[in-house]
Each structure stands twice: as structure tokens, then as C-alpha cells.
Image (cartoon, rainbow, N blue to C red; front, side, top):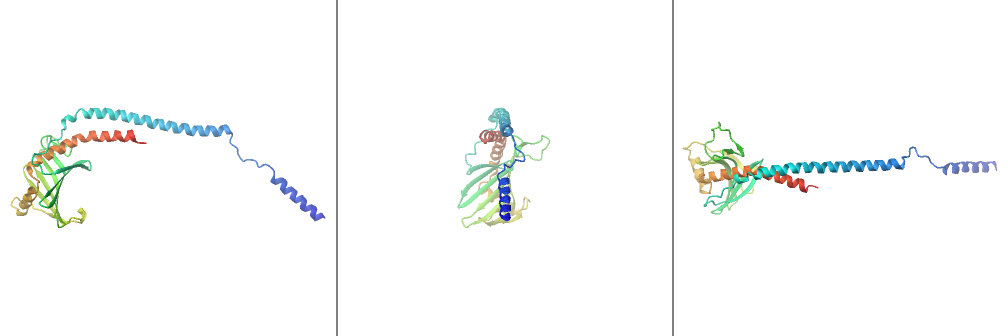
Length: 247
């Protein structure tokens, strides 16, 4: 009987403790919670407004710069190619400099001339920069050209050439299969620059027959110079387009 009484007493104590309310270690008032939520929203809105104002500030400045550049575009008209120019032209950029790819088919061969570095004697512009008047190292318009010639059989050679308004000269040769990347081609072989070198003279005639003529050099240099002077406007326009449509 005594044992039964002790069990009932112990059970009663356990149940009594189990139904007591449990006190929170720390309770945040409802007002504080609302203030925290409002504060976070307010910061988000402020950041969004700052971003919008900054974009508007940059866009205003860009608009002014674009209008200024547009006033000078009439000076940078792209020249028309010579009447007998046999190539299709593709435009691009390489490390910020102008790049023009000239393509044609010639007696079953695929011809590709990639002109990158240039000097336009008329405007005194070299790769987009005006040369110093005291620098007389370059006396004629010129372009640096990577020549690629592929045969129907799949064989391919590449030459590095300098085309000036007074002569065309090949400097280096690579050879391999058409499917090979530039890194997989065998070479280079350095071509002699002696005027009496038969190989150099032969290669000059080889690329001239395929279209890399000195008579085209002034046009190419002038074209690339005009493109380089039009480039700042293109950069500004693309930047504005990015900011206007960036979410």
C-alpha cells in the first residue's frame, strides 16, 4: 500500500511539472520585429535608388560623349575598294586593334589574308594611334598580313607577309594539313630578306598572283585607319546599350 502511494505521488509530480508553461529565454516584442523588417526593406530600396541614380548619371555622360563623337564621324568615311578588288571582307578586332579578313577562291584554292597591324601614311595613323611627327621610321602605308592558302587535297601553307605600297615581302612560312590548328602547323621557316634571294622573290610573286598586291595597300591602310577612328563611338554605344538593358 505504501509503495502504491509513493508511485502515485511521484507520477503526480512529473505530470505537474510537464504541464507548466515554459518561459522563453528572450522574447522580441512585436514592434521590434516590425522595425527590423522595415529597416532591411528600407536599405534595399536605398541601394536600388543609388544604383538607378548612378546608371542615370553614367548614361547622361555617355550621351554627351556620343553626341560629341558623332560630330566627327563625317571625317572617318570608309573608302570604297578598288574596282578590281577580288576579295570579300570581314571586319573584326584583335586585342583592341583592327582586323580585316580578305577571302577568295583562286583556281580551286581557298585564299585568306588576315590584315592586322597597319600604317596609313595619309593620316599618319598606326594601329589607331597618331604617330609622332619626329618619327620618320615609316615612310609608306603598310599592313602586316597572315596569308593562308589551302589546296583541294587538304594541304595548307601559311605565310607571314608585309605589304607596303612599294613592295610585298614574305617573312615566314608554316606548312601542314588544312585541318591542323595554327599550333599544329610545322614551322616557321624564316625567309631571307636579301633582294637577290630567289625564294623571297618567288614568294612575293606567289602571293601577289593570289591577290596581295601592293596597289591595294593604300586602300587597306586607309580603310583600317578610318575603322580605328570610328571605334570609340562604337564602344560608347555598346556601353550605353548595356546599361540601358541591364537588369
